[in-house]
Every structure is written in structure tokens, then in C-alpha cells.
Length: 115
Image 1 (cartoon, one colour):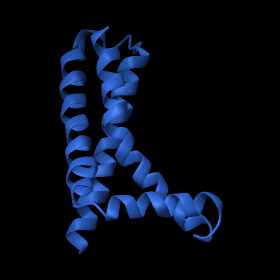
Image 2 (cartoon, one colour; image 1 turned 90 degrees about the vertical axis):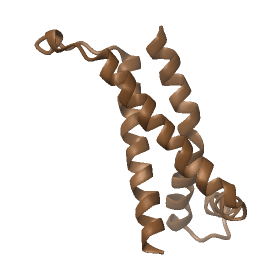
Image 3 (cartoon, rainbow, N blue to C red; image 1 turned 120 degrees about the horizontal axis):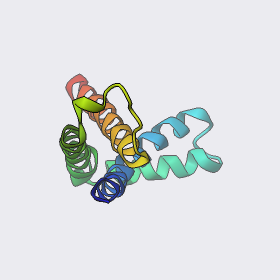
């Protein structure tokens, strides 16, 4: 039950950064004047227009997901069960969100260093 709550918590925390990254991809797929690309451009401009969004939504929240996910996976790790691994869906979701948070942090930090 605890892992399910953590998985849901991590999804909520990671959503703003995932939305921004998705908007970056969608914006480059089509002209920014039509349909989804226009909406994606508006989302990007909203993030860019507020200084706190970079620090909170793109760094602090994914970092929280990364730390929480690593701690949860470490706590749930049972070396005796390595031969018969049947992972629960919540544990897989925690692992996926942890990897996604690491990827988002890597992209954001590399972009910050490039500027």
C-alpha cells in the first residue's frame, strides 16, 4: 500500500516537468501557429515567463521524485528474491518515474550548463 501511495505521489510531482518536456517536442513537430504546436508554445511561454518554474517545477520536483524513488526502491530491494523476481506494478511505476526524473534532470542541467 505504501509503494502505491509513493508511486501516485511521484506521478503528480513529475507531471509539470513531463508536460514541459512534451511541449518542447510537440512544438518542434509542426508550425507554431496551428493546433497542438500552438498550445505547446503557450505552455513553454508560461514556464519561461516565470522564474520560479525553472527552479521548482523543473529542478526541485524531479529531484524530489529521484530521491524518493531511489529510497523506495532501496527499501523494497530484497536480495533473496533475485531469482524469482515478480515485481508489483507500483514498484515498476516507482522505477519508471525515478528513471524519468533522472532523465529530466539530466536534460535540464545540461541545458543550464550550455547557457
